[in-house]
Figure (cartoon, rainbow, N blue to C red):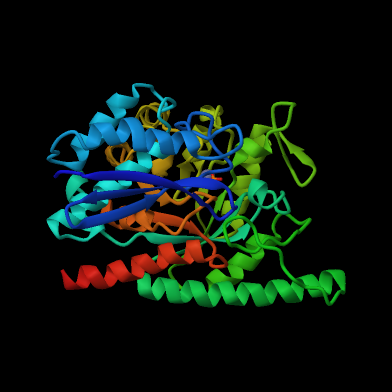
Amino acid sequence: MKITSVSAMQVLDTREKPTVEVTLISGEMVVHASVPSGKSTGSHEALELRDADGGMGTAIANVEGEIASLITSREWSSADEIDTALIALDGTRDKSRLGANAILGVSIAVQRLFAEAAGVPLWKAIAERGGFSAAAPRLYLNFMNGGEHADFRLPFQEYIFVVGGKTSEAYAIAQDAFAKLGTVLKSVLKSNFNTFNTEIPMGDEGGYSPKFEELEKPFELLAALVAEHSGTSIAIDAAANALRNDIGGYTLIGKDYTPDELRALYAGLIKKFPFHSIEDPFAETSMGDFAKLTAEAGEVIIVGDDLTVTNPERIKTAREAKAITAVLIKPNQIGSVKEAIEAVQMTRAAGWAAICSHRSGETDDTFIADFAYGVGAHGIKAGGLGQKERREKYERLVEIEKEAEAV
Ligand code: PGA
Ligand code: ZN
């Protein structure tokens, strides 16, 4: 593969914050890739390079300067070979010299080029690259947004409706359930506040963001939807880093919890509602509390996100501590497709589930859908249905279902 042109531009994500889009040209092939951006980030994530004014000037200069010089200088035999060279060129542990956003944009575009050159769909190229059996992931739809993504109107960051099975059927169920939830929320808010102004605010990830003082209310609403559709369940991302108080515990809706009390709260919720998984139930520094909850959670999956940050070394440490039973995989937490694939392999080696995820600041790039299908992930988190950039990921999975039937 000879790459002849490398360029980048600044685009805006769903929060209207700058991010980077990369374009690569090789012969007749032209590919693009853009990179999402998180808000509730783990402290061990690779570095997103942003100028003092929030812009992408330096990241773009790095793509069009050093990175372009390297990757246009010779022929390449694989996407892995280019990723290895990019990681070495940066030379830091957290990609802070060139920027994980600059490197990942190029890395995703490179994966697209090699798939196109081989004449295979993107998901298939990813499956072959990592030695995975491609398969449809469960849809993890963030129906109600809270935490940092919605000014803490709800304490947990994500109240998720999980749908398994064939994607086209799962997506149809999700559409029906999301619309139903909107109708129910309107009537609940109307009776609570006796007002005609029943506009429900939306959170960053295209889910409804009502405000309830009762901690269990969102679960009652989700459980009602689950009761209507077999093969569905509830998940949360507690994103507990953001719930920490300064007395060594957590605060939810004005009430303080010690780590043990919070664990008891989760145990009660699991007992009462049809839970499938709980992500980041404790802060990223509290590996021991993760392990205690995992030991008593039974069938319910405990997921690491800020805890593990798609980093093979941190996944290994969590494995030794038996801290979790699933890992959230976000390519931009680590900064290259190669390392994201390694993180999935490490997760599988531990006997755990991989759940692939978008970020709260998204673009129209649907790479994560192909990635989730290609690695045969347990699930994909791509937000609620109230935002186009979220729906596009699920819709790409429905397209993949058709492609997979045809190839
Ligand atoms: P983020 O949130 O993209 O803002 O980090 C998503 C998550 O915590 O899973
Ligand atoms: Zn998370």
